[in-house]
Amino acid sequence: MSDIVRTPPHIGAAIRRRRKLKGLTQAQLGEKTKLRQATISQLEGGEGGAQLKTLTDVLAALNLELVIQDRSTSSRDIEDLF
Figure 1 (tube, rainbow, N blue to C red):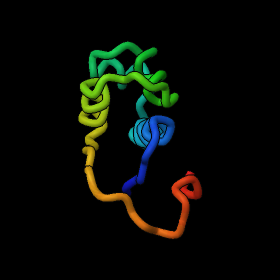
Figure 2 (spheres, one colour; figure 1 turned 90 degrees about the vertical axis):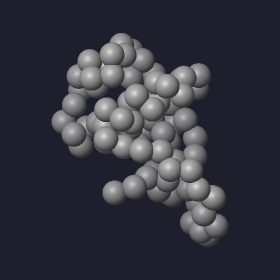
Figure 3 (cartoon, rainbow, N blue to C red; figure 1 turned 45 degrees about the horizontal axis):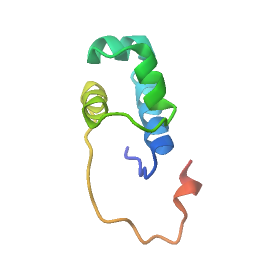
Figure 4 (tube, one colour; figure 1 turned 60 degrees about the vertical axis):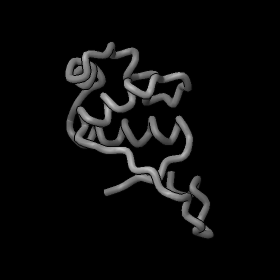
């Protein structure tokens, strides 16, 4: 399963979905990443200002990777996916 995300709120929602699919609480994910539960909450809430290292640590803990590619030219709006 892959998600197309383009904004901090979309990234946060995708991380929240994956965390829940893995059966983890925010606190458990925080323990795996050595981040506070509040930091996980902020990231999932799409609050701007998260450090790139925080994002990559969370992605690694969820066994996810970031892929950079050209934006799709689909006629379907990205908002329709959420």
